[in-house]
Length: 97
Image (cartoon, rainbow, N blue to C red):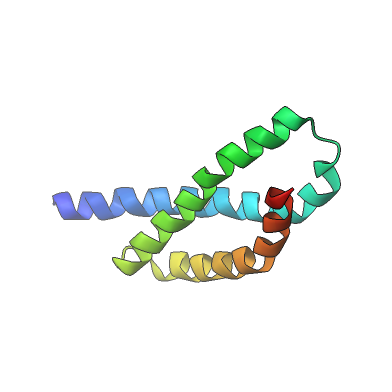
């Protein structure tokens, strides 16, 4: 029973992580236009907090490797990975400034 509860809890977190990460990674191209308008402290805050998003991607990777994603979640995860790959160069350029 504990295993079933663990899987259910993980799947709920997976859905939340996917929703959150899709919002964040879809927003990356919009940051280019906004970045120059941000105060230095806002940029620093972004740079310091971005690793939280990266950690969530890593956690999803772990759950995927453990087979905890439902088929629908796996499809969304794969789509997320394509989004990350597409927007990673944009993010890297921003973070390099």
